[in-house]
Image 1 (cartoon, rainbow, N blue to C red):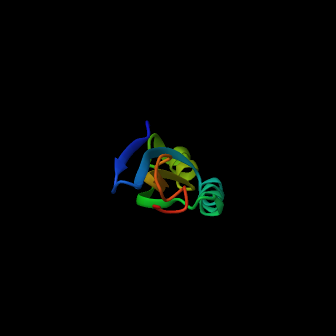
Image 2: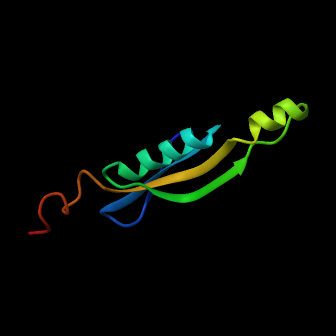
Amino acid sequence: GSVRNTKINNDLYYAEIDLATSGSIEVVTRFLGKVEELKPSLAWRRLDLRPEPNRGGAAAATQSAANLSVNGTIRVIGVDAASDVLKGGKK
């Protein structure tokens, strides 16, 4: 998805992006761990993890049982480049 910016006040804004993917439990867990390590820190505004639906019989059910569908919105707080906060405060 595209990044949405929303102004909080004259200095701060937040940027959000929607995310949708799926994968094995191991891959999803590693991905979530990498998100936690990012700097600046990101926050989940919304995160939904669900088993992928069974489509196509017993063999597919066994395979998809280990897969998760991930949907969410990631948010980061930012400082406006023209803000006095970046210039050490108002003088």
